[in-house]
Length: 80
Image (cartoon, rainbow, N blue to C red):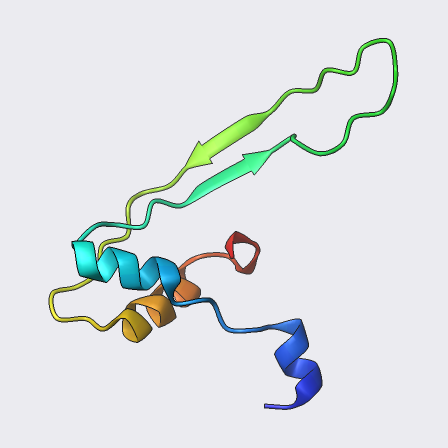
């Protein structure tokens, strides 16, 4: 992998996968939107939205690296 490609698309971190595999717990994908900076106007409020996806469980005997790779293949790149 070239240096440029590594900066553009780094691999996901194994932390969440390690925790989920060790605890036999799922990753629950969550997307937050509408939380960006607001313009300074008289009405600075914005509408925030949250979307919660289906849980993704580690398979029995699956390593953290394999689970992380499966998460990378399943979740959109913006999720991590």
